[in-house]
Image (cartoon, rainbow, N blue to C red; front, side, top):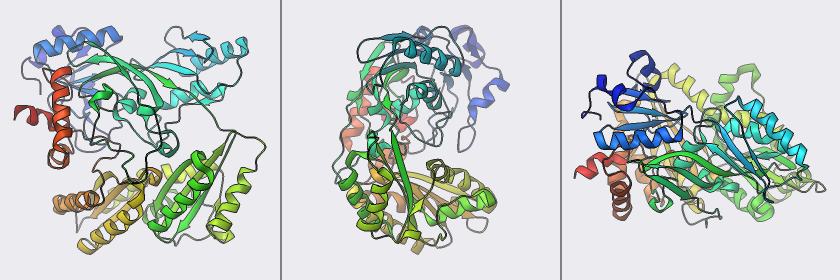
Length: 513
């Protein structure tokens, strides 16, 4: 919290882009989920140089900051508790685009995303550039994921960061958090979709961080684990506690020439993971997504959409469903036929259980689950506990089976909504209470069951959403001592005054101790 400088003195100290107006602050005090916070001020830098100067000033004067970009985070890291909010919303422009053979386009002055897209496309046509996959786009950190893909689409390129919040989630936030998303099984996390991240340490020093290369993770190891940040990656994946990303170079990927997908009913999650193994054996790295949806989650979407619900399946009585998406850059192969043959022959599904549908319709089902869960939570009036766990893929099916059984045995009146990134062992879990059985009454016990079972299967209590302030106590209790020690040492090196996100990972308490 900011105690060294009074709120009234902040604008004079932090400059013209700082405000303490309560009406301006209110928007930044309300997180995606959870209770509102309380900010002592708001600062919205217009340039990277302002960010550097701001950090140096705050570090020198004991002003604490929490970082706000798209405000889509789910672990309360962006919710202030007396700190000043640092918003990167004005750092939202593309900077340059470079082809593998050295041609470079530099974007002009600030403009709308569509205008930048038109300018880039005109340049691309002018140089007669052939399709390429190894192009590099440099953008400011506050640029939204959807805005990046609007820019790249006319070039038949993409930045494959797929999630329900992509209209607001920022490139810098995703890279700082090493967000996974629906197609991490194919492309890796946002940490791997980056090339370099540029920014400043907590005391204003310039930092350049190189991104790690993506390679498939063995199935007996964790593929995603944001409870184990890697300080050696610098600003990448360390969730804003060491410094602020202000711009990044990211990889552009060719949009596949073909994509095919199906919704597949399965009897249980161990059976689902056998299908995953078979799909990887046949399609290899061309398995672009492998998502799972529990029956209660699908039912919530049906209730939310009503007559607008579109499903390729006549019946919806299976305990789980899979969204399997495969891709190919080869125009001459029959990808749809290959997928159908795989499901009919290798998986032995009858025709009425092979849920072919336009990809957009299947994605709408998957990305409507959180909205549907929100609606049911409000209707039931008993609150919700949300988790983001992961285990090694090799045990993921058994993990979900055991976890569901334990929760049902202990709390039969609670509803478990399960869905997520089965291809990398990631699960999003919503436990919904009712007015008669609110989750708050049993929150501590529910958290313990979920995290104990996850740990028993070699998993992590935080797969991709970060630790933030929400899971600080769990980080202290469950993270290996060497992981905590490395993060504390890095915090002392990069942010000696504890300026940035001081409560994330419970670092304020750990440093004080």
